[in-house]
Amino acid sequence: MINCTYCKAGAFVAVFGALAVGSYLLEQRSAVEAAGPMAPRFEVDPMWPKPLPNHWVIGATIGLGVDAKDNVWIVHRQGSLEVKEQYATHTPKASECCAAAPPVLAFNAAGDLIQSWGGKGEGFNWPTSNHGVDVDHKGNVWIGGNGRAAGAGAALAHDESKMAAAGAVHDSFILKFTQSGKFLMQIGKPFMSKGSNDIENLRLPAKTIVDPKTNELYVADGYGNRRVIVYDADTGKYKRHWGAYGSKPDDTDLGPYDPNAPAPKQFRTPVHGVALSKDGLVYVCDRTNNRIQAFKTDGTYLKEGWVAKNTFGDGAAFDVAISKDPGEKYLYVCDGSNMKVHILLRETLEVLTTFGDGGRQPGQFYAVHSIATDSKGNIYTTETYRGQRVQKFVYKGLAPVTKKDQGVVWPKK
Image (tube, rainbow, N blue to C red; front, side, top):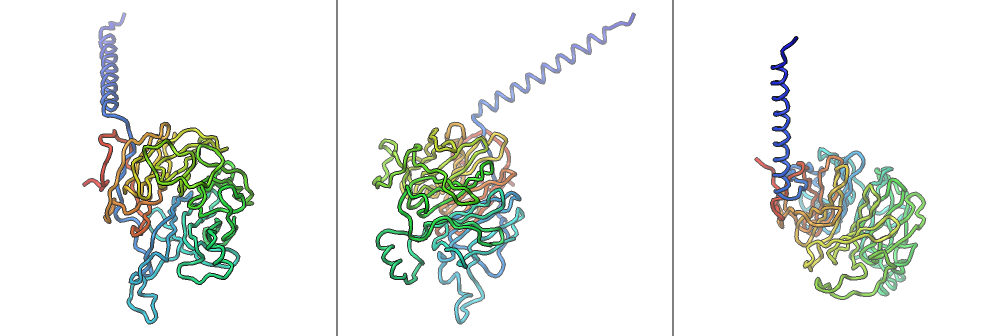
């Protein structure tokens, strides 16, 4: 008969070891839970993107999208550049530098410029004030605009002058292009918008996004209208639209924003951002009401959350993007007034933590305007007004939230 004394001792050691490991893991889990909720952590990449060619510079950068290959697309306003920023284009040439880059630019993941195009062309109207860019699941590029007149400093035709004087706006449309800049489709016509319940025209649309499941185009519309409107992305056929709380939009002036007043029953202008989750929810930025509202794709209202509710100025809810973890657990909201990015728990719309600060250095912001994520979970942002740039924030995994305001997320040494 075999003596099993050693067997029993070995079994005891194994059980004890398993208990010890289990106890350690429980202690670690308890320590993490005691430290508070978890949130994604980021560090700015101060070397992204690479310098532009041809002495090009970019102006107010007011659109941002990431395509299926993790290429980063931006749209900027050439007309926002100062005279000295375009000396190379003067006649005679005033200096070697600089010139406005084309309005639409695309960078690969390494930061190399891979596409550049945009501006007036045959068969379509180009916005007088570009606003928003998105690349859909088929690779098409969508652009909106929030320009009211026919062109900065341009002489209007007689009929256009009359329409502008009556309150009509030029950028009442959205455009669809290939990635090389070939025109595909225009929805809406200049100066033709009739308000928030006009289904044929937009009115200063801010941002677009296409649902890959249904091929439907959602538009945050926008600076003139107070709604989300949905079209078929191939034909441009109208599908549906709604205002705040899923109600019929109303263009009545809401007056000055008051954070202590009851929640406004309509969106304020601009309705500035829109994002779609994989589980079929639509998140809308009601910018100057400082809130995010969530809907089903049919416009059914679900919930709302406030971001820096006491903000006046340009508002706090500029744009929204969704995290890339399997459950899309977080929302990222850029705040152009407070110069920050807020990280929200998507389930509750609670702000967990923020990062950023006002300034010109990498990781700081001057009017952070648009936000997007790539497949690896990295964040990209653009800045309007004199910010004039795109930045990359590298995803560094989850970490306990130890403070509400992280400040500038500079790379660790």
